Length: 268
Image 1 (tube, rainbow, N blue to C red):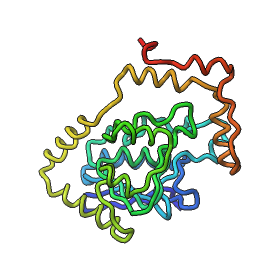
Image 2: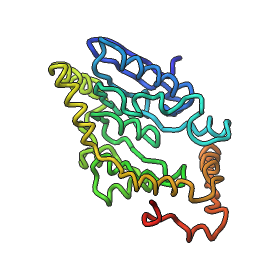
Image 3: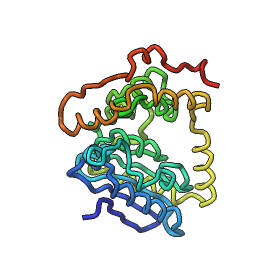
Image 4: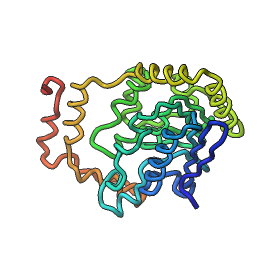
């Protein structure tokens, strides 16, 4: 069974994550398959719009914790480099529609975030999970999504959001019943294909250029904060998740480090 099913036709590529037994979790095999699929989509002269969806009750649960624990390191395997992923690095000049069939957590939330348009099923859950797995929560998602500071803070601290709430906040374009999910995404794709090709490409480039980005100085602060704390907590988080127990965090290797939290005024 392929971890990623692909359909091609009428100018549309449908990518369907197919790991329902693992809630679409991103293991090395799936990450590699996505890199290959997005490269094919970018290079194709026939495929102009992509629809990205999942199978079962999840779109994508994010990092495969079981694989990370077995490997002994957090995050993705070095075998699949982020810079090779054209989708996550924003190097595909063709529109992508996320058809979110089920929960989207952590890396799965980020996959949805990278899409240009989003259609979702009512009742499903979303979570920016960095605060649970790393030493800095998802500080940038609210800014990218044009959300208020209070909502962005809630998102950064890994509170869960329903599809209904994200739709009300304008983060989701359409909210439809499950049997209408793919038909609605296909209708949106069909509309995009009616536009003059140059207009479709140019408008996409303009809209992506207008998305907010975190200023360089704040990114430098984020890099410092990502290292502020006990690195052993990264694997403890993943082990506890895999073992279905409450994590026992250390916090800091030196308790005095808590008072040495990097501040913006310290960043050059």
